[in-house]
Amino acid sequence: MAVRTALATQFQHTKAQTTSATNIVECTSGTVPCVLPLGTLVTIFGTITVHGAEITNLPTGTITFYANGTPLGPPVAVDSGIFPPVASLTTSQLPAGADNITAQYSGDANYLESTSPASLVDVGQTFTITANQTVISVASPGQSGSTTLTFAAQNGFTGSATLSPTMCSNLPPKSSCSFNPATVTFASSTTSVPVTLTVTTTAPSSHASFANRLTPRPWPGSRQIAVVFVMGISVVLLDTRARRRSRAIIALVALTVIVSAIGCGGGGSGGGGSSNPGTPPGNYSGVTVTATISGVTQSLNTLSVSVQ
Image 1: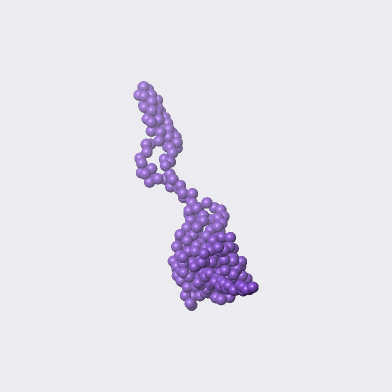
Image 2: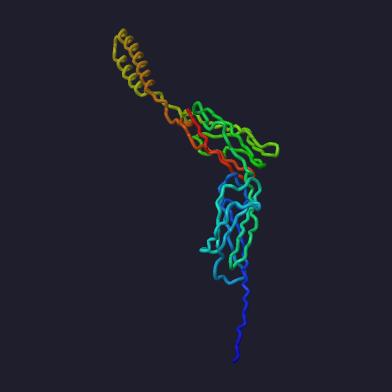
């Protein structure tokens, strides 16, 4: 009786290749490199793409995020419930300076590990705006008040910008702002620039219109005076006695003067004037200064203006 021997069959399992990529939510403006203030809370996504294999099971495993080769935290489990599979990390601990952010996929039983290209982020390459006093006091409408702002560069930030009144917002009604000096320049030797911010208000005013001031006006009460004068002349002419006629003429002149005075006193000023209420007194909070230097925008929104 012959005995058959089964031959062992060997199978070689080849893992599929993957490609990893990073995406930093706070760096979607397209500016390269991305510039973030120190301590900014960022969310980094790492995605995995599969190549050269029929996908039956999506990649599993973990992704570790690095800054300049140093882990930003422990490995994060890959979410294989979506396509492409993804993992994310949220942190405010990006190191100051130039950071090369990468995501390294660990691989699993079916897929090879991979590391993403670096995303460059400049952390701390920015500037700040502070005020030595946040309340700007104005003695009365029409007057001005000021405070000193300090523009300070951080971690070697350089650049220049012209400051204009359009950089102020939420000012009191009928007021404007100005800066002195009107230019901020950061260089290797200049990292702090003091700037005087002045808020100028408008005083209330009123005036008659120019056309009304030039318009001739009739003599107030002229019609009444004419009637009285005619009646008086009639009485005088009817009186035949000279003495009485003389007294009547005197009385007529006196009466005419009285009526004229009453008529002038009753005349108006003509009206037609206009007024400018100026800047209303009050406390105005939320006054904001926004400046952009070398593509980096910073705001100071803790100022207030008090108009007495």
